[in-house]
Image (cartoon, rainbow, N blue to C red; front, top):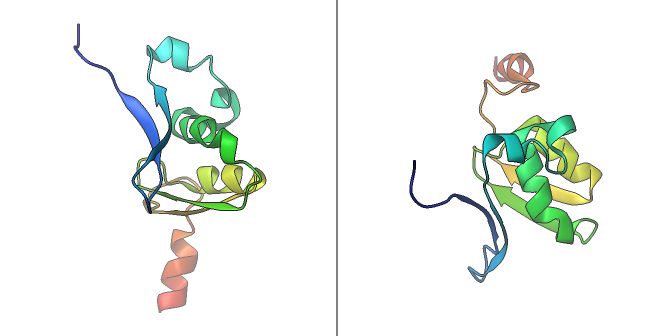
Length: 103
């Protein structure tokens, strides 16, 4: 049995203040939480911690664990703009279009 716990956190980049967090539970329990079914685990986690900031004109900056086209679209649908590292292997990433633009 592992010791400790895992948190998904939302922190203000300017002040360093912890704004919101979610304690990760067993995988089966996490699949029952809001947003999981339509968006999957990572996107659902970020939507849940950002819920208090929907439609408040904020920008979310996230690392590549959260970064995906799906997450960016879901946040935008809730009025949250985002800046994220998105891996080129992510579903929906316009890899061909970017390569064509460079050549």
